Length: 114
Length: 116
Image 1 (cartoon, rainbow over the protein chains, first blue to last red):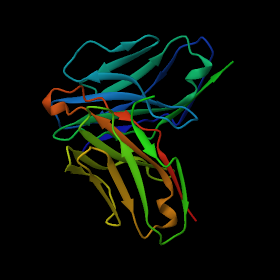
Image 2: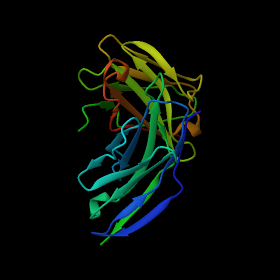
Image 3: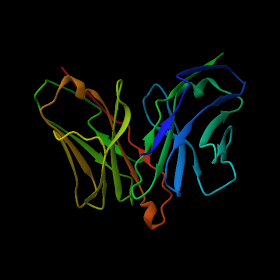
Image 4: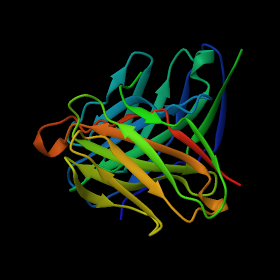
């Protein structure tokens, strides 16, 4: 079975500071993908960043980057220069195997303080 | 805007009733996924369709069913509704990764179902 664990239910960061959200996962698949999704108060699910497991290089998207530790099955999200608009629930997700279904963690509620 | 549309946005109904949620995937996407987001269960996968055929099933109740039509839109049917079925139901679509797609799923805005 595939599982995703987010151990930080809530986090807070000051505007312009850097914050790291943690995620660990478990899968027996060799080929899989990891994602971070953002869910703002509008409840829309927005893809923040994607990492292919076969790629060693950590993915980056502007102020968002990941630290992918394959052996440790760890996939953390770093948000640099935090902005008020980053306030949202962040979900770590895993997909792999014959289907493309997403397995989600329980989420981390991030509050960016002015 | 992800390109995935869902109707209706909100639905309020009574226990024991039946409702249908509708989803139109992004142009060109053959795969449609349904997810349920509730306070007690979190975000969980319900079912996947690919080009009209069921491809995978998750924690979908027997009272729930889905289908994907030739024009690729999908419907999720929920029957004999219970209070616990109140949730946000998302549809997502993707290009099939098994044929070279990127594995990225694009989510619709969701349908909020309230069962009274």
